[in-house]
Length: 169
Ligand SMILES: C[S@@+](CC[C@H](N)C(=O)[O-])C[C@H]1O[C@@H](n2cnc3c(N)ncnc32)[C@H](O)[C@@H]1O
Image (cartoon, rainbow, N blue to C red; front, top):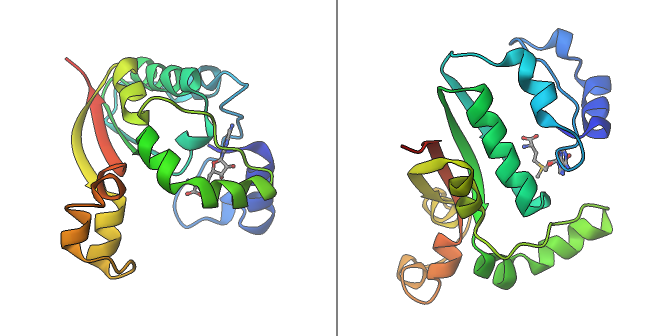
């Protein structure tokens, strides 16, 4: 699922029909359309993994909560994997990238609450956490001393993470 314009761009260059694996592209604007209607034909009891990668920062709080509720209603046996940010991380570290994206027409939503807390409000519990920055340090793509990450840069380490979530309760 992605923005209609983006999917049209991809489809023109990499047609779904020629993909080696089964691929269905579902165009949707998460912020203005009912995702529930688009996903309803796929609803069912099968085990499902839903990945929301690099998307939640663009969506207003209420849209994030409604998206989570929609997934929980339609796919009773799914796990969700999503990157989430704390408001502090957003405030301290996201400014430069947000400004660059703004020039391209992409706008980060205003956010006062942790994205993970919004998903927990939708009805999820967190079952695993991976720090994006610590993972990048481990992979050698970002060079920051580990002791610094564990002390003065804890917000950088913990404020942007991949959460794995499942239905609460
Ligand atoms: C950083 S990219 C993530 C790319 C994507 N996860 C992938 O693996 O190709 C952000 C994506 O969020 C999508 N996006 C942002 N706001 C959206 C919205 N309101 N509705 C649908 N898609 C949106 C953009 O079109 C873009 O593809």
